[in-house]
Image: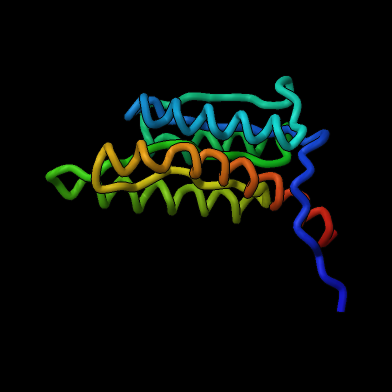
Length: 150
């Protein structure tokens, strides 16, 4: 049996990031952790492109445009949807996740989804380092896995 092993070498990869500006402190923390992990995995700073959008619902459209451009090996979605007192939380959480998945499946470009959905600001802040780093690793791993399947 041939096994495709995990490969976290980001050398030569071009990564696009779409970050929500809503819940700024959380999203900036996600970005910092993500960027640091990408660089640690040998993705060059000049091969990382960041686009910011107003909120989580706008992330899929920007990802779609980036995926269709052919300029990126993988994409990363960064955002934070924090529960409030209305049903809006569910709509934004569900629709942003659906949109990210649809872009990935329709374009074939791997997307690491780090749009966090939490009950509180404290939960979001406690998770930003891990989630940002995990998104970077997932993006790199998926590019290398898909290339190994070709």
